[in-house]
Image (cartoon, rainbow, N blue to C red; front, top):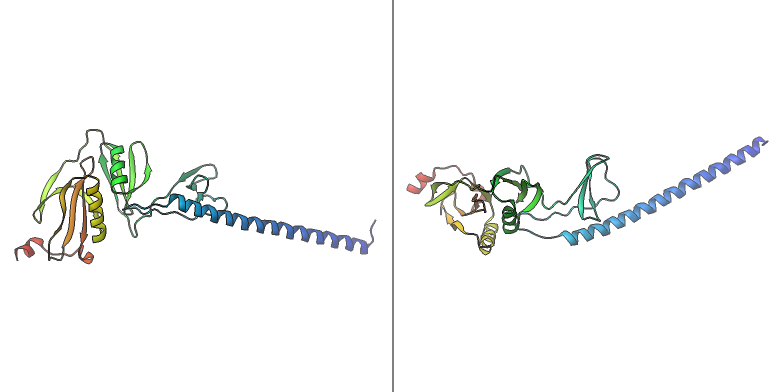
Length: 251
C-alpha cells in the first residue's frame, strides 16, 4: 500500500513520536524526584524539632530521612509516625526510634538482675538519663553513655548481696559497675543524683590524692540494691597506670 518513500516517512514520524514520549516521561520523573526530595527535607526538619532532647548519659540522635521506599535490609525514617523503619524482608517490617549512638570502639555489654522493671526504668531512664532501647515484659536495655546495659527481671524478692573491700579508707561494695567520666561529667552527675534524693553509699570525693591513680569517685545503689560507681580520673591517661598502691601509700 505504501511506496518505499512513504514507508520511510511513516517510520520517521513514529521515531519522532517515540522520542517525544521518552522525553516527556523523563521530565515527569525528574519533577517527581525533586518534589520527593523537598518533601523529605521538610519532614526531616519536622522530626528533628519534634524529637530533639538531651539526656545526661545518652544524647539523642535524629537520623536523616531518606526519600522513597527502603529496600530489603535498608533503613529509613517514617515521617508520619516519627519512627525509624527497617524492612527485614519484602513482607515484614519493624518500626523504631533511635535515641542514642553506640560508644566509639567496642561498647561493653552488661546484664544484671532487678526486682522491678518499672522502678528500674524510672532510675536508669529518669534519674541517670539513659535512653531506653529494646525491651520486653521481662527485660529492658539502656544506653549508658553509648554502652549497653540490660535490666533483667529476676523476681520480686531479688536484692543484690553485698561484699565489701577496703579501698583508700572506704569500704567499697562489690560487685559494682559504672563509668570513668570526665571531671565535669562526674560533678554534673553527682548533682543530678543528689537532686533526685538518691543516698550515696560513698559520697563524692577525691581519693588516691597526689598519686598516679588520683580520681574522683562516688557510690550509690539502684532500686534493686545493685551498686554503681562513677569515677573521674584527674589524669585520664593514668586510668591503667600499673603500680602497687599499698607500697606508694606506705612511702
